[in-house]
Image (cartoon, rainbow, N blue to C red; front, side, top):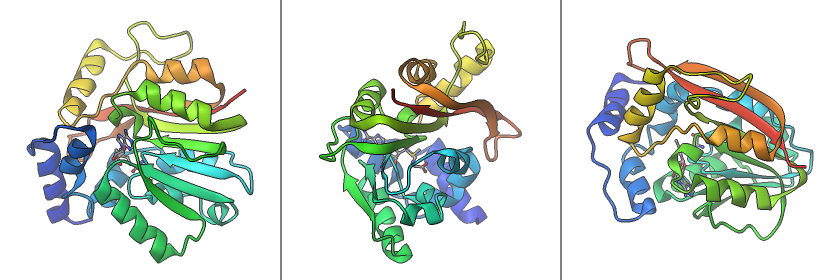
Length: 241
Ligand SMILES: C[S@@+](CC[C@H](N)C(=O)[O-])C[C@H]1O[C@@H](n2cnc3c(N)ncnc32)[C@H](O)[C@@H]1O
């Protein structure tokens, strides 16, 4: 961590205009100049990622898809379990982040991990898989419902889905779910929305409706340099029937 790289990242997050006519161009415009410092800053912003990866019950010899996988840092959290998988593919639409992921895979010697530069709403691995993860990617995918439907189709029966992301509650959430104040429900979608990140009240209800819930945590996590402000996030692990 260095103040210089933090300041560059904060400048990008706060002032740099995201440009581009397509979703991919906008992702590259947003991440292109942050790819090198991405992991360091996001470690302190994107809470719960290691916990989700470590809690995900992927069977030995199974196949994992990490959708919107970015630099591949989440795969580190699997530790030894990664080498016991038949394979894992990291799918992302941003060329700069995929390049960073490729370097990590080569440095670590992860022979069973591949990358795909693709849109997860239409990506076809040509097989069904045992586990799928979305780590802070659903909120950046405009057609999040298409991404989740695709993931559902690609999972084997009994396969598991792990999601960790920002969200806000519905005004009237289902019984047992957290209820956020009106200011929380307004502030975080507005603030993140400047960077094309869209915390939604609907992701979690969709997940709970389509999967058997194995783990569900609703929490708040600190945002670096935001004077103690905490953003709501959840961890969901579910099994396809
Ligand atoms: C906040 S980053 C999270 C990256 C990584 N999963 C992590 O936890 O550090 C969101 C990622 O989603 C990717 N993304 C957004 N929309 C996508 C799409 N339609 N298809 C594939 N990747 C997408 C972005 O390029 C970016 O890498």
